[in-house]
Length: 268
Image (cartoon, rainbow, N blue to C red; front, side, top):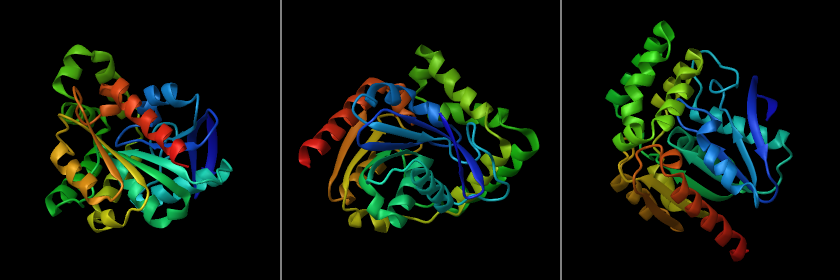
């Protein structure tokens, strides 16, 4: 675990293993620990880098608005600080997927491959954007407890909450630990994020698209369309999982990632 100062923020970053670099970008309102199973499974053959984005986990928060492009700039600066010179495999879930799209758009030469987990290419509708802005104000007034209770049923497959309460507890703890300023700043940034659907056909790196079979936020049908629009994309639908597929069915997600990364090495 390292502390890295980037663009006026101090980021907490996990840097583990050796080999080709894989960067894991967490979702909202979570932190790097959502990738714990992947960090344990893949470190033998890869250098795994997992930051807490600004305002989340143990990274410092910023008041106001943090745009998705700013998160991408922070990731690029963290890679500079870690002396990562070769292109990386960029893996993002949900909000982390939004960050991955912006990173690819701004820093194409630093990306060798892409993994999109349970995310969306479309911008928010006006109603959804307004809901995010209202949630930002609510969290600043009252903290993250209500946010955790509202989001958990949408993040997890009902069976996960019933049969694996430790997973639900881990997600709840991540949300409760968030700095309300970070949650609000990210919500405002997501409300203003651009639609990147037109970017999809121009993505020219190997891409793996992963979605939980019961994801209510980024449904499989929507993610299948994302995969179909990307020329070199593979699609994996994960059973027994909702929006948090890497936590809910870690074994299958790990296997898909390991194969994707191994095939990448063989293709060189």
